[in-house]
Length: 159
Picture (cartoon, rainbow, N blue to C red):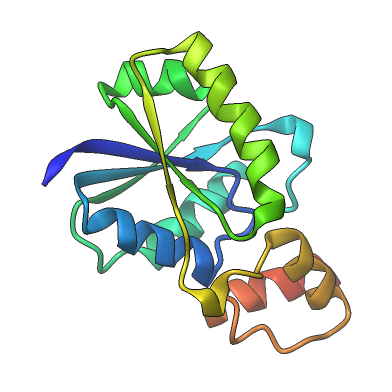
């Protein structure tokens, strides 16, 4: 096992795809910190505390996984946490351009911090929080995409 890695994201809400990435990272690193970004620019549906709580519940049975939140640059958070690796999930090729730009920017800001991409199981590769919120607003069954308590929270938020 290697050192601590940070898996940053908005997680609005956490999906089975996110959980799959956490489990994959868990098999590589000794400790995983899932860092929920405040990120007011994205205007999340769920509050920071709600997103943290959902992730804590979703990862309660996973050893070596800690849930935290941060504001600001992820490289600053990584330094503060004494982590030298960021985990990023890639679902489809369309994610790559944005992720590539982010990696290059983070390398300039924190050259000592490496980024590793993990792909979720193909059954989760098309799930996005944005698509999930749209499906929920139209009354879709979300059981294949998120745990039941998240599906209920989504539907309650969107009423």
